[in-house]
Length: 592
Image 1: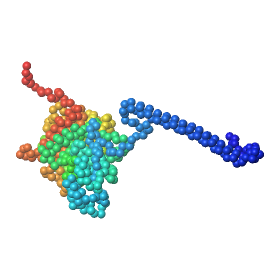
Image 2: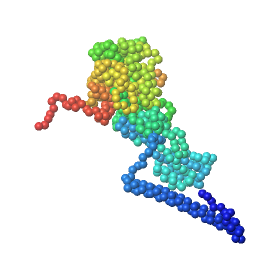
Image 3: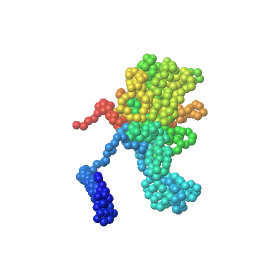
C-alpha cells in the first residue's frame, strides 16, 4: 500500500506562491490518513465479531441438539469408553459350593476423639458411657483432659450407636468410614473361616486381614484387587454344615463328651463337604487366645489340629494291606488266641473271640490279637510305607493355616511292637482329617485323594494304592461291621452304611493311659456298594449313661451320632435312598 505523503512538494510550492500556509496542507493530509486507518480497523473488527458470533452460534446449536437427543432417549448407566479394569478395594466374599455367602463386608463407621476440639469433655464422657456400657466415664474423662490429642473410642459402631453419639453434640467426637467383616451365619463353619482383624488403620480407612482358617490362608487372594472381587468358593455345603453341627452338638451333649469333631469328605474329589469342631465360637466376636490346655479353647480345631490315637479304625488298613500283598483274603483264618505276648507287653481283645477268626470277622469283631498277628506278617517297613501312601504320616496340606500344626505323632523307633500296636490304632496319633483322607483313598477304588476346602468339578487322579478288588473287599468288610458287628447302631435305612469303630484310651500327661477317658471314633462310608462320601465322627471323653453301667465305646457313643448325621445330611446332598432296601420283607398285611 502506497501511503499519501503529508507534505507533497507540488502543493507546498503552489501554496507558497499563493501566499498560503503550507502547514495546513500537512495537517489535512494527517487527518485523512487517520480516517483511513480508523475505517480499516472498524472493518477488520466487524469481520472478527461476525466470525466469533458464528462460532458461538454453532457451539450452542451442537449443545442444544445433544441435549435434545439425551432428553428424548431412554435412561441408561454411562459406560467407560476406555479400556482397563476397575480397582476393587474391599475384601472378597467367601461362599459355599452353591454360592451362598459365608463371609462378606459391611459398611460401618469408627468413632474417635480429637480432644483439642472438645467443648465439654465431662458431658461427652458421660454420654459415651451411657451408649457403650463397657466404657468407664471417669477413664474417658481422664483421656479427654489429658495430654492425648487423638483417641480411638470404637473401631466399629452400629448406625444406632452413631446416631446416639451425634445427639451428644460434641464437635470433638468424629466418625471415620470403615468396612467390617461380617459372618452372617454366626458360628456355622467358624473353624473353617477363622476370622479377621484390622491391620493398618487410619482415620478414613482400615485394612482387614485374616487371622486364622481360610481367611488367613487365602489372605493375599481375598485382598488382591486384580481378582475384581471374585468370591472365594469353598467346597463345603452350608446346609449340610449346619445340619452336621446341630446333630453333633446334640450328640456331644447326650454323650456327655468334652468335645467332638466331624469330617465329611467326597471320596472321589477330596472335597470336604462339612467339617465341624466343638466347642466352637462366633467369628463375628472371635474370643481371645487362652492359656493352658489348648483343647479347652473354642479356637482349637479338633478336626485338623487334634491328633489322637484313634484306635480300631486303623484295623482296616492292616487287613487291606495284607489282602493287597496276597497274604490273605476275606475267608483266611487268623489265629486270635490271646493274650499275645511281646516282651513285657500283652495284647488282649475286648472279648474272647475263640482260637481263630476269618479276616472279615477280625474286622467285624474288632480283634486286636488277630490284627497284630497280621501286622507281624506285613512287617514294620512295609506297614510304614503303606500308611505313608495313605497320607497318615505327614500334615494333610489342607488350605488352612492350622493344617501344618496337625502333624501326626510317630513312634521314635518303629519297632515290631510299634508295628503291632499301630495295626489297631495305638502308638500313632493322627487327626480326623487324616483318617477321612485315608479311608477315602482306600475305599474309592484304591486311588489316593487329598482333602481340599476348594470346590472341584472333577475327581482327583491320584496314584493307585490298592487294587479295585482290595478296595471292594475292604468296603464289604466295613459293611459287615454295621450289619452284624460293633457298629450296628450305624444302620441308616435306604443308605448302605459301612464303617469301623475305634475306642482308644487317652494318654495321661505323665505317661500311660486313663482308665475312664477315651476317644471314641466311627469312620464310615456311604453308600458302601458305590461310595460317595466318608464320614468320620470323633467324641472326646464320651459317657453314655442310659443304663446302670456307663458305656464309653464308640459303638454306643460315636456310631449313633454318625448315623443321625447321615440320615440328615444324605438327602441334602442329593443322595436318594435305596427304595429296595426300604421295602418290608416277608408276609405283609394289605387291605383290599
